[in-house]
Length: 133
Image (cartoon, rainbow, N blue to C red):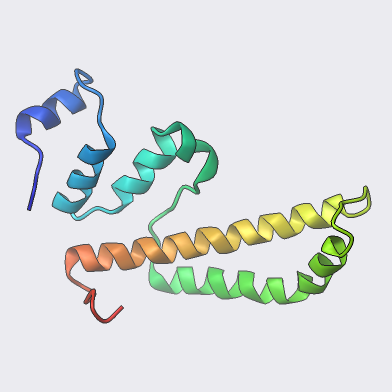
């Protein structure tokens, strides 16, 4: 497995060199910490800071409850989303509902990202079999 030299890690940690995306990918594999990828993207990358969700590591049970809860709420708003989208525009009366729907979809996206991180961490540490998930 490819790893970064201790000298390079020391330079990165002391701010003498800027960490590169390739460095983070290697460190995430070597340390079996896929969360480093999300941290780098959401904290260090200009695109990631605005277009990615910060993902917290959580136990599977909590991820499942949050996901199912958000999906159940989606069932209740799908008809409203269809009503809003029907004419292709948002009028003043629709903005609040649309914003609430967007927040709910963000919750679903964060739950999916948390589940993916949980899976990636399990594969990296050997607690999950890559071929079975």
